[in-house]
Length: 289
Length: 350
Image 1 (spheres, rainbow over the protein chains, first blue to last red):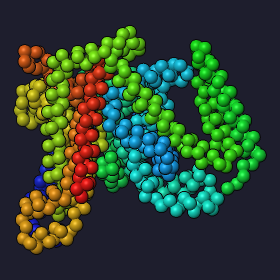
Image 2: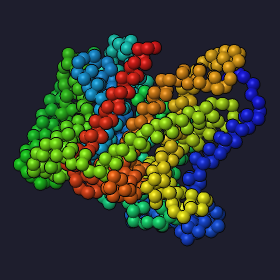
Image 3: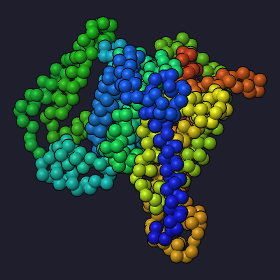
């Protein structure tokens, strides 16, 4: 806009923006502040700085990390492993499938594509109960543990994330000129070489988008891991561990908030590093999805 | 293209033979009820060997077809096992007395009749619709106002956008507990209240709405900002020259020009509010007493997704929970169909 505005209006808007930001960030501030306090000081005055000390933060963190119901490093490690494996496989297999669907104009690829799109409306609740029993029975039958295991849950994320991933990737691949692929095959590339050497490198921006969308979902997901892995199983993700931990420490707010701080910290650090990509990726996913 | 070499041919045949062999061995063990712990291994290695064998299969004519099948297989297989098969089974189970493990009787529509006779479930449905409508309006309104604020000339725009978006990064479970603390320990202190908002059914529902707007408005704001930025600058300039007031610019230029964005955001908030589960679980766990039409209910803040979870997982009533889930699916499918219809109509008009 090129209209001149009164400086007064600009100041008013700035003040409003600051007040809203303070409101939005207030709960985060509470989490950080009260992680520095003892439980008694939190109930007495949750917004004051009385009794906040660095030593108490170390103490709270130590209590939380060594807690048997939380097991921070273990659940953090499993969360990271499950998220990274799922994202890598979704990107690779998603791109492979999307490329075939896009470039292979047959009745079958159209059927597969529309099944994927239609499946995006299926809520998790309608498949979760039979999913658990299917995984349990199939796992027992073939002798591979599908529940309470990392490969099992990565496989489930591949199935649930596949539809949206393919949908966004197909939209992008459609825009890549087919001449590129023709030229490559005339130069002697086999179909798989065309994909891995020509198409896949071109997909970097859209794979960033789907990785951000899937990453936010998988890292924060609670229902699927809690159903598949169980509250007290050998493998747990961070959200499941937080839920189990809070359930065992009612009203021990210093520990609960320290645990919350540990759980949100990785996401905040990633956001500070890749803020622009994350916000753009979320917008693109919404507009296309 | 190169002609397949002799090495490749041999490799392909060896791999196919070995793969089939391992696969058959594994399946024989499975079907004979063997409990050998390593029987999963030959199955996986067998499948991988078959894939490698197929890849090197000595054919030029069908190579492209083989690649197509191999490229589609991993995702389609996972999709079929985790979505399609459970969906079909789930719809079938809703007509039986499935207890999570086996089916004893076909019960027809009993589960569906039972759930509509349950006042607690009716309340959950009504509450969910109320939640969806209130949120759809509130989130879009707040997000749009934030977007107007974040596209005007103020300092530190980047910071404000990031700050408003921040809550969207955090998972609902952790968010729910952070807000539970805020409501019961901090808000009570600041406003000198005797009881926490979460303790009373009515205010607890408002609390869930507040948290939801707090979490979601920043995200919707980003989409509105993108929409507002697509309005060409010269259109706004022309309206300013013609002497349009800021209000006229807003209602006669900005809002009509971002109509498609409004449709997207409306349906995004609609479907996500329907599916709301995590915050509901962590903040109130659906609790809240309520006296309605002579029925005393204890699930005053329990919405549909949480009701399904509690029915099936907590109360172990699998068939009933599954029937509720099927109804949930039908509701969401209807919403999606309306959305597709509406956006297609818009495209035709344009």
